[in-house]
Length: 520
Image (cartoon, rainbow, N blue to C red):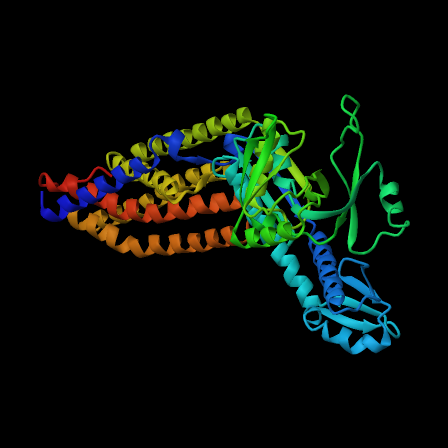
């Protein structure tokens, strides 16, 4: 055996060994998709109008504070739509001061006059488009963080067909309702100063302001409380300052805890910027109530007894699981907008297992028929083709496991097609060898010429197929992309096995003795 043949055998053995190592044991290293493992498939729509409305309301609140700081107390600032807010009642003598306070606002909003002292501000179209895109991207990242913390194996979170849609696939998930609640929970945490309250109902809260609630005040419901010990809990309402001292964006961490009564609670800590803001806020409002607002509901409203810098706690009627889920959603960040479900499908694990069995049976059945054909038609040379196809499938499975590709039912179809591509390549080579033998060339020369002259043909056909696979991957949906991924890897490995592995086996057989004929 020559050195050239020896290193070829070492390369083949090394590639096969690495491939087996990459996918064995399959139960731990091969990623199964939703259609094989079972789980949940969801398509969600991000309500980007919510984000634009919050941005508009926040801008109106900030402008209201700026006007107050500039001693312009007459105007009324009110958000009137998703992207619009109005200012009415600007005194003529303060119009110049008012215009100077608009320098930052007019970077994002167009101002139109509605008469003396009255203005309408509309968000600029490019700002609205950018904010919608940013909202979807932020929602995508938040959902991905939440899904990862759920411990789901190999989830898929990606943009869907429309600009505001997100695809979520959770293989192996059994508690569907819990997963849905965690994904769509806004979990917007705000710490706000209590202006007045609690009140027994919303009407009483409004009456405290003469029936007209000031623009910088909002009334929110609280957690039902018992007025007297032993009495049933009743609904309460609080009048809060609209601008939050800190929000969930200022959090560093959140963990489930137990309060002083050994009840489930959620503790949280601030990052440096949040700690500075919260410390200054609590230091300036000692003796007043601080409302912990979660998704528009006051969870608790404790008294500020001293300056608080880094830590806080949310108490309520939580179960241990609810406290853990709330901590998870707070850690992953608040969703920038609400979500609606457009599509939901649940695949049972039994259905997935049946798909695996059917796919594997189809692949093995196809491989068996191919083997019979090759052995009958090409005799002993058929063993070379069978060996190259088997090695091709081993390399394909190993590369998919190494690259982290997900095995889906269409992917199994890609496996079966790879078998067909391997047969096609070997048939081209064998028929060329037979032509060379018919031309009365020696066996070794015929084998060498057969591989050399067919190589470009094989390369051309595989490149054309790769181009098709690239289009499938670029424009296809999840299952089509899975098929394209398997097909691409199978095509690349097939060039190696059909040309290199099969040729090496011929050379090994012809190197042992003087051969005058070939069983083909």
